[in-house]
Length: 238
Image 1 (cartoon, rainbow, N blue to C red):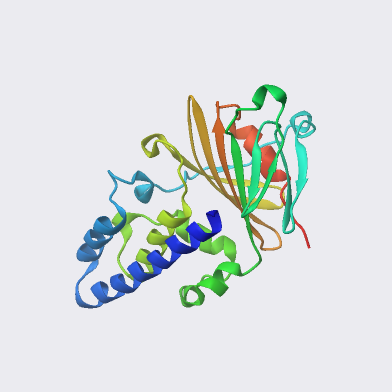
Image 2 (cartoon, rainbow, N blue to C red):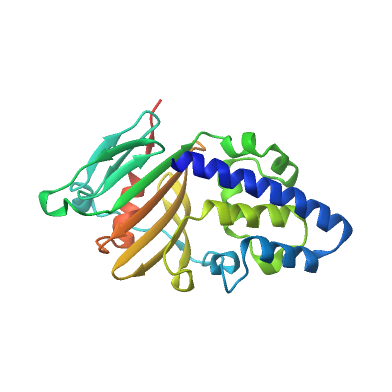
């Protein structure tokens, strides 16, 4: 279901981008930004479109004691260790591990993996803009900003930003950070405001694989250090 929804949103995004290409050819950046605002929202309606990652790069130290509490799970494409009490979904594959007291918990972690160069295969035109791997694709997407849209490439990445960003709660309180953990780097968009936390993690490894880890932390059980620990366990499965 999540995969079908993503494909549907991507198709709509591509149609919007085609329309934007027509506008930029016959109008200008201001008209282009207005058109985007009508299509996917503005800074007030969708604040994430006007946010960029903080300059500081987080390089957290992983707590080995916490790592030992995580439960390993293997899927056909990837493996990960997650906390007890969370349902786990990779595309259409679901796994559950609940302690008895969490039987009614709706906390869930969604997983997605894209092989090296996967985004380039989906959107080959981005190579003309110097995008050669998954990490650069996601980096351009995360730094997209409505007020900085001046051409069709800027518009493309902004529209993709709206497609790639799931529900992260109240966007007005959201934060965007860059991180580096040993062989992994990427970006996290998150809100931490009780009663629930949301973490949208976009992770690239040294081999060029891209992982998306979206955590709906119902009950606000996790903090950023916990999330970094989960990310550190991501592995592709051949």
